[in-house]
Amino acid sequence: MKAPMVPSSDVVSRGSPGHRQALLARLYGAHLRDVWRWLGLFGVRPSDLEDAAHDVFLAAFRALDAFEARASHRTWLFGITRHVAIDHRRRVSARRESGDALPEREDPQPGPDDALRVHEARRLLDAMLGALADEQRDTFLLYELGGYSGADIAELMEVPLQTVFSRLRRAREHVEAQSLTRHEP
Image 1 (cartoon, rainbow, N blue to C red):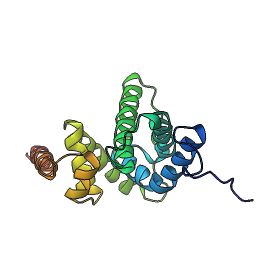
Image 2: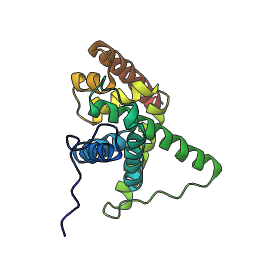
Image 3: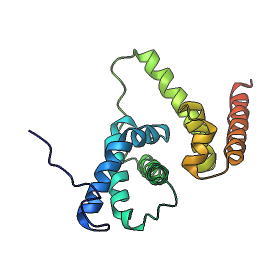
C-alpha cells in the first residue's frame, strides 16, 4: 500500500495546516536520524529513544509558526532535541529519587561481567558529566563520542568556533580531574 502523499510547501499556502504538515514531514524524513543520534548522545536510554524523538517532532510541530529561519532547520531541531533530552534526564532523575524508576534492562548479548563493566562505566561517565553545565556536557558528547567537528558543533549550537573549543577544553579538564581523583589511592 502506498503512503499518502503529503503536499509540498509549494502547493499550499505558507502557515496553512497543509503547509505545516508538509514541512514537518520533510523535517522528519531529513532529520530523524540526527535527532535519534543526538538524543542517544545526550543520555536518553535506547528504550526511550522512540518516545523522545516523537516529543522532539511534536515540539517542532507546535513551534513551526514561530520558526523565523534565523538558523537552519537542522540547528533549530538540535536546540529542541537538547531541551527534550534535558527534560527527559530530569524526569528520569526525579523517578529515581522517588523510587518510581523502572529497572533498566540490560542487553541480553553481553555476559554478566561485560554488562556490569558497561553499566559502571556509564554510571561513572554520567556522574562526571553531570557536574558540567549543559553546554559543556553537550559539546563534549558531540565532539568526543559523536564524532562531530568543532565547526559542526558551532553551527548546531549557534556559537563561535572558539566558544566550542573553550567549552570542550573546560569539559575535558573536568573529566580528567575527576578521572584522576577516582584513581588515587
